[in-house]
Each structure stands twice: as C-alpha cells, then as structure tokens.
Image (cartoon, rainbow, N blue to C red; front, side):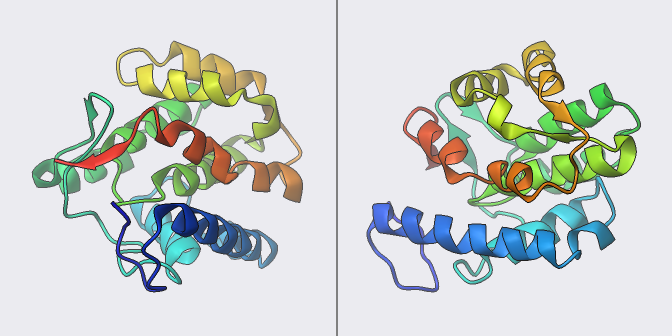
Length: 201
C-alpha cells in the first residue's frame, strides 16, 4: 500500500525514492540554516517541528500525531488512544546523561508518533539532545545497520545493546555535515522495512 501523498505518487518504490531525495534536501537545510540549534532539545514539539520540516512537501500529516495504530513485525507501537499520554511521559524523562538520553530515544521510538518518517526524525532529535547536553553526536557511519535494527527491535525489553552500539560511535564532531547527514540516510530505514514492515491494524 502506497501512502497518500501530496505528489500524487502511486508506486511505493518511486515514493520511497522521491521521499528520500526531498527529506535529505530538507535535512541539510535544517542543519545549515542553524534553525535546528534554536530548538529545545528533548521535547515532542521539537520532534514534531523536525518531522514537519523534513516531510511537509510530501505528506499532509507531516508533524502531526498519527491517527492509526501501527506495528512492525510482531511489535505494536503505542496505541493511538494512549499516544498523547505516552508522548507527555517521554517528554518528562530526564536527559542529562548518555544513558538517560538513549532511554528517552528508545521510549520515543516505542511511541512512534508519526505515520511515516519516525526513524529519520527521531535520530536528528537524538543527536540534538546529545549535542546540547553532552557536546557529542553519533557518527552513524560507525553504526552497523543490521546491528542497529536488531538492537532497536529488542530495545523495549533490553536497551543494553543499543546503548553499547551508540556509545561506541560517539564523536565530538558536532558540526560535521557528513556525520549529521549519515543519520538520516534512508537506507537505515529502508533496509529494515521488509523485515519490520509497518502495517495498519
């Protein structure tokens, strides 16, 4: 099923290609304009702004809380009826240490507030927290994609793996454009899509 989009694209492969191109262009603008640095780290509002910025040219739902229940493989994300409460709870979580920031990231992934584009938006959100709180970011080129997807799948039960993976990839090169752009590389999302296909329930 191809998501309804502003561009009238009906082929899912074509939509993925165009979405990747447009969202990368917007992500670069977000970084180079300095607008990202003006946002408050760790809030849902900031995540919503990031998502809207990346996807508003493609989807009407950009930046808006989803109104459908979603699952990937056998894992169900926060049900719509509890989503607002889940987002409020995540926002209140502390974010002063690396462990706290990753725990907050994991919980936001479980909430999965948007219909599409959660991974890319939330990785930028994660890096913003790390940069503002610790003066560090993730060098995503040092994070194996398969290991990352498996660790994220298991993170709701056990977050040791994702913490270890991300800690090994920390860098103080917070203004490096290539490191930032690697975090929104579509392949992190797309290669996991066939394994953890998003479905409406």
